[in-house]
Length: 562
Image (cartoon, rainbow, N blue to C red; front, side, top):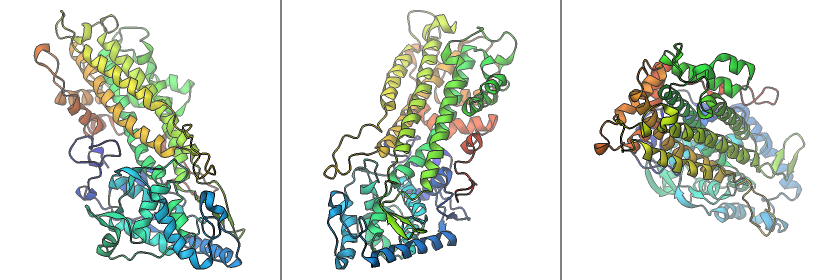
């Protein structure tokens, strides 16, 4: 969906246009594609998660997947009948695993497992994030290794289609299974908890009743299958990745406009640079910059002021290329996780066994989101340097602070300070969190955790911050374009960006009566308007799957990405 229709994610308290509170009901979008998304357990993509989360696309499950589910459940029943101990099913959880559960207590224990894990705190997650969590868990259950009944998966999908959305709060997971948040979903499935039904929050049993659904009585192992999953990490994370993909293009647009204002040397985007150093991201960044700058005066002989520009201009394809590559890596890691059984214990159908494993450990995702934030911040840091160079007369060849008239006033110098301040905040958010777990949870049994939800949340916060920093570059670059004699024509993409900036922020002429509406420009950059205008004139950015190929490969039963 265009970003203008995307409800805000956690820690974006309002959507970029400021028109609705985070978590507003999706009905305003009004989209309900006719072809349902069919879950197979093998080929769910980040793009599909975002579409289902932010629209009303219906979801179904493939018959072949249901057949695997039934086979796995048969193994569970056989192992239980044999009397063999099964962690979290016939034993307690965590440090209580040494305590057996009598057969007559199994159903009560299943109910208690969901209730016992409830402990999420903080703000309620927006409805789209909850939808993404539900979709991720349903697809994970479609794998052969989970061992739930088909009725449970079908009810979870029915809630999604009926728009019964459990109320889930954002704090409480250390990333070894998002237990507290997944338990909030599980409570509604059994008739408890709270749910948002078509925009109204009510008790879970009431929401089910209004939707024409019945709560389920959990069978042995199903409670743990509900809660011991990383739905928050994979669901929320998929949505953040979609937002980062747009952020990368916005960074490209603002850098290209700075090149126009600086009268930069476009030899940096010559195709030979990418061909002779064939990183996929660098080549993609160079190609997109050429699209944005197509038709610019900078392609004319002698237009560039310097043989070599400062590195913050000269290394844009490399810096942004690293971000492209980091994003591609996280996407591949995420799509493997979306199509995995991250359960413990795990059902090995062919071996007719239930195994205690560590598949819930998503340190690969946590570390990759840490890596992604570092790449975003590297791009933000060179952005800040470009802003400072444009404001610095010695480098720009224009007035100090890009003042409209030379004199004692400072023009836009204060924007330079603000940009530097926000960039410092970005560096703080870039710090890795996958090494931050220090707890001795569950009497020392759970002595390792990925902190993946925190890594995803920090990435979302960084995206929000980065758009404010981009807005500063857009204002400064547009002012430089207006002051530089002969800085026309602009490129097909940069011209569209310049016009979007000027619609939000006027040119600085009289410094005694001028205050840039940065918030309005942030709304333009972080909303659909900036990229919509650029795409109209310079074409849409390439999808990530085209830049880096399919995340899932043939030969593992997954099939290629559609």
